[in-house]
Image (cartoon, rainbow, N blue to C red; front, top):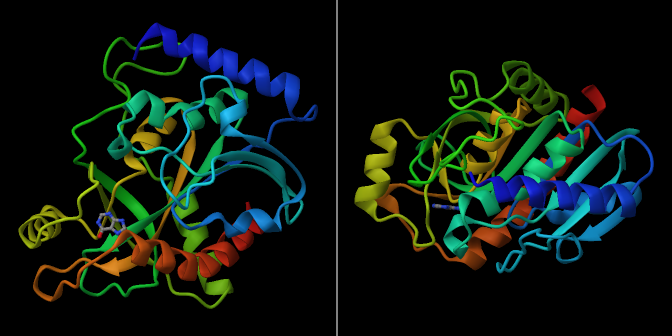
Length: 276
Ligand code: HPA
């Protein structure tokens, strides 16, 4: 990491303190991925800030990623939502990809729910299901902690043996039961993209131990753990990614599927917020 990033983070935080919300910053944050923005309409008493108005905040170039920070309440629980994210495949650096989550953490967020759209590698998982992420494999070739460590943010060599909080995983599963949805659970493989996988790559990812594959999340999760946040990861399985029965997958298809399973995800998150 470069020292400059710390200056930028402080600048963004100062701006938010001056221009948003005088009350305590929400302890719970949510990052909404591709096509999953509908949850925002549930937020009461909300305040919004476009990423483009926040100093140094990177702005997504991808359709389906709105790009705004929302503060407010769902079920009387205060939350901070990052609606939209930037990706490595857009050409952003790992530091830029993690800017938003680092801002939330510096502002006071302690628990982060990270959502994404992913392809199912596990043949038992159905399109439209939600997978609770139990662990990940970072195959992006990037790491947001590369370079000089910023001790103010976290340790040089953060432990990664328990990345996804076990209590939050159990909570998510039981909240799924409460709303009548059986959640899958498994390992998320993070790839760089933007090209989708070849059948040989899909086969390899499955053999490596992956249950779902996507082009986001792992950078943010590493940055979150570096800063000591508790992490819950939820994947909307938008397509089957199986080598021997692969259909062509288009971005439009992924966004539409994410919108569909986004409705279930929305109910799940509302239930989780009730229990947190
Ligand atoms: N591969 C990679 N990323 C994805 C996929 C996929 O099949 N589906 C949604 N994001």
